[in-house]
Length: 280
Image 1 (cartoon, one colour):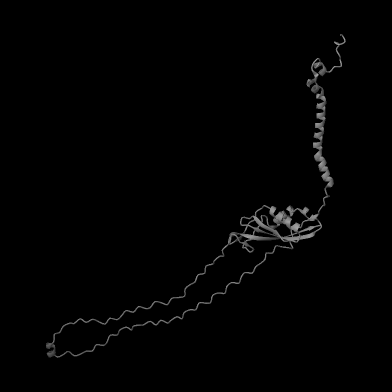
Image 2: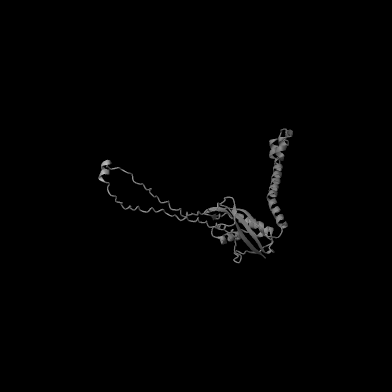
């Protein structure tokens, strides 16, 4: 009996707590397996965390091992080509219309003025007085007689002289939608055309070329709008990659131009710029 009541020092806390209790209830088993389950969960969570953290570095390393070696391209840009100045096509103006034939002058008619001669007094014819016997038979007196009226002369008006014709200069009408190639005042980039070429050269991405093309040429054309913006950018060179990059570079320059003008009014103007680069 004493041996049954003796305290066993090797008993665990769970065995002491559940001593003389129903160990088959389930709580006893849960308390005994708690430490092992917690340890396994910690180890599994640590492994998953390490796998998630290391996976991006492994993928990056695999991509670097499979990536192709980058080829270096040495491109010597030709900033300004003084030997190829921009020459605008000169379109000969239409010949002026022939002058109108001289106006035939009407023959002047000689005007002969009718000059009325001054009347000359007729000499008096003295008649002898009648005899006294005749005077007694007649009644003498004064009789009023009207004189002869002469029509007054009015000279004719002078002939009409030559009329003076006045010429009025008519300026051509300027269209707001037409794209002009000839203007009175050319479109200008802020800082001049050399500044625009410098921006094109500095923005050109040479990595699109293989590097062994040598000298590549193209002509870039675009429309300078009435507000100074650039539209309708095109390139007509033989190398498609060079043309595409030239178009992208010109479109990326956001500085506005000073528009071209005709009669002091801003118009749309097509600008042409040759572009040459050398790749070795």
